Image 1 (cartoon, rainbow, N blue to C red):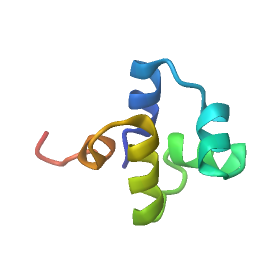
Image 2 (cartoon, one colour):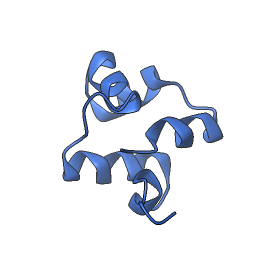
Image 3 (cartoon, rainbow, N blue to C red):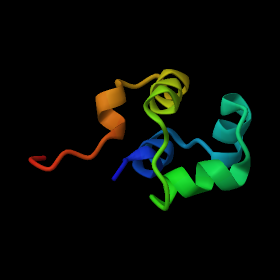
Length: 64
């Protein structure tokens, strides 16, 4: 599970904006946000860079 949705909401960022910055389709980003699919590691790092967060913040930990 990832926390992309929570981070987007905290920062007030729209999925469409993130999709544009990533160069991915809205449907692809929506799949990540809804946890229907998980981004590849390099994509996760790119999302973290765009959102200016530590990549760890995008990953839901089991012991959190």
